[in-house]
Structure formats: structure tokens, C-alpha cells
Amino acid sequence: MNNPFDDYLVLLKQMTEELKKLSEMARNKNDAVINNDLMLLDDILKKEQVSALAFRGMENKQTVLLKSMGLTDVPLSSLAKHFPKEKYLDAKDIVEKLQSEYKVYCYTSEVARNTLECNLHQIEKIVANMQNKVDGPGYDNKSPELPKKMKTDFRV
Image 1: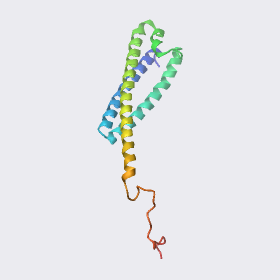
Image 2: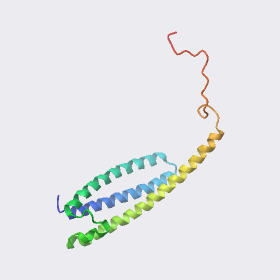
Image 3: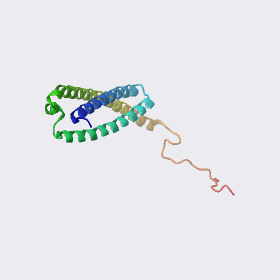
Image 4: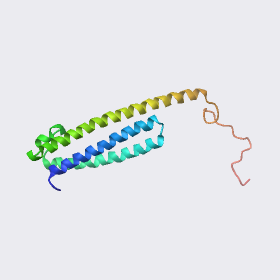
């Protein structure tokens, strides 16, 4: 490890970049839902899971770095004040970028979530209407009648 303060700034930059990717995925997810592209939506959801695992690794690294700097109880917004004077401006800038990117991500993910929920409600309505109108095998609770002379032993 180098200087833990430098390592922590690198980690915050990585988090910012990962949030940018998540924001882009949320935008793409919204487009996929609007365009009814389930394959693209599935691909995006898989990428989001990978990103979540990446964040879990970053969180573990963050915990170690904060302990080594003695800043475990310091909120992100006041973190720069605890950095050495020569790194204060860098820390302040990176923290502001991370917070800004987090706000963008929250907004884009909220839009995507609302679009998904709206489309799911529409699907539920269509399915409910179809249950009242559709007749045939598999759509009602009746079991199909088996032929009377059906044999289960093929040797006979």
C-alpha cells in the first residue's frame, strides 16, 4: 500500500466511475423497457449484478482504508477536512464528483424503476383481462380427459 490517503482518493474515483456506468445502465434499462427489448434488459440486469459485486469489493477496501487513516466515523461530506492540507483540494473535488454522480444515478435509476413498474402494471391488467376471455387447454383449471383405453405399460 502507498499512502492510505492517496489510495482512498483512487478508490473514490473508482466509485465515481462505477456510478457513471450504473447511470448509463439505468438509462439503457429505461430504453429497453420502452422498446420492449427483454434480451437487452436481461443483459443489463446481469451487468448490474456484476457492478454490485464490484461495489461490495470497494466497500471492503474502503473499510480497511478508513481504519488505517483513523476516519471510520467521519461522514463523506466532511472527509476532505481530515485529509492533509496538500490533499485537501483533491479530496474535496473527488468527494463532490462522487456525490454529484450519486445524485445522477439516483435520478436515472428512479426513472427506470418507474418505467418498469408502469409496464408491469400494464402487463398485469392484460393478463387479468385475458384470463376472463381465453378458453382452451392450459387456460382453465380442468384437467384434459385421457383416452379410456390408455395403457401405461408398453410391453402389453
